[in-house]
Image (cartoon, rainbow, N blue to C red; front, side):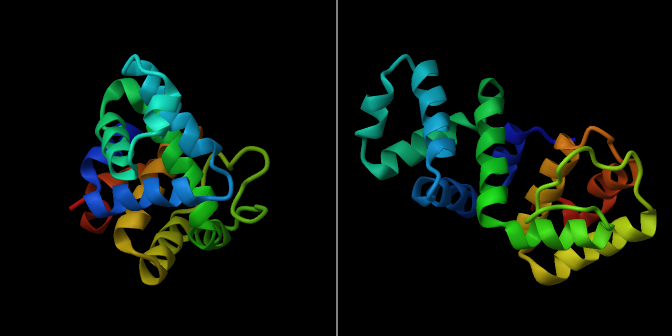
Length: 167
């Protein structure tokens, strides 16, 4: 299971930059600002100083930071926020294929303790057929990390299926 800071380290710079840019431009900028606040605190600077930096410098500092273990929480918040804000179709596709009840890609309550292997495989195939592979990889790793049930089949797929590995 990959932690969020490791995902930022393995994903392409283009996708990492897209996540940060999307969250900076999102209607709900709280996720982005929270990540910036965490970085500013750790760097012993005022958040306003970081916010006043040119966008490229802010993005570079944020991306350099969220690849480190001490920024796991900020990295996780950025990834989850981005998935919920910008990748709703992907979330809905997967949950629908699994037969999991959700509201706009968000599961209210607990996920099932187990899921049928054929449904899980169908969900993964549906994602790969309809969405960018690297985004699918990020989503499935994040989903697995957040899923308290820890579905064994999903863990095996993430470990062994080459299509679900970061390039």
